[in-house]
Image (cartoon, protein in one colour):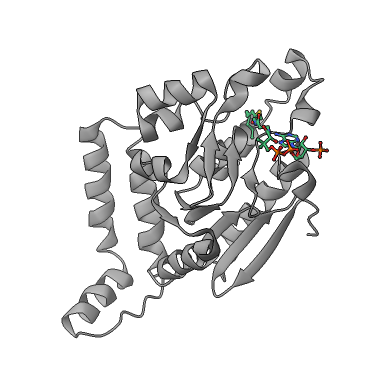
Length: 258
Ligand code: CO8
């Protein structure tokens, strides 16, 4: 499918999805949300793809939901279309790992989209924020929920109530991002991480993603049980035999996703 608001490239088992609305700092309008979901679902079902990277431009990962598009909408419009509900649900349903490579602004829906990914690698130019309060609304795609789980109540309240931005160093210190690198190195680092994941058994990668995500939904005892049972189930795979044999034979594992 030809996309107008994103660019998709597949190379060495990694699907790179670049948000591409430069005139609006990659603001997420309904077309971009729809195209992004389709591209992610294509990547998820494409046997050549083993990891996904979402990125934006040097200036903006995404400066939020498209304010122009939203400004005239009524309650009935947003409620009946469940505005951005499908984006949340469809991104959450992707089983392959997704890395957000963030440079510049990741604000509002942009910060929320980054948090919807499995982890965030940030350039030292990244700025995260939930400035929806300045628009007379609140976060709508996880800014009050996921952000609070990442950075704790105090910082989340601060960001959601004052609308202030967090720089990359603070974001790493607070647990929002996993690594910060110089802007010039961002794509090399993100693609390198994606390549590392692509080398693993896809069964283990999907199971690890599933298990970590359950930790947000389950009490500890239930989460531990879920993890242990999934761990047990991996012993039914050829990749477990191969991975452990390769370690003992001091060679690289050849995983076959079986
Ligand atoms: N929507 C639409 N257009 C935007 C947006 C946006 N969110 N952000 C920037 N633009 C446009 C500007 O209007 C401008 O267009 P034009 O040149 O036609 O006037 C162009 O991008 C460049 O922007 P600026 O001139 O403002 O660039 P600056 O470098 O001066 O400032 C900022 C950059 C600080 C990022 C500034 O653009 C800004 O504050 N943007 C809005 C940030 C914001 O409030 N985001 C939250 C939006 S609401 C939201 O995300 C709700 C989420 C809930 C649902 C989630 C669904 C995904």
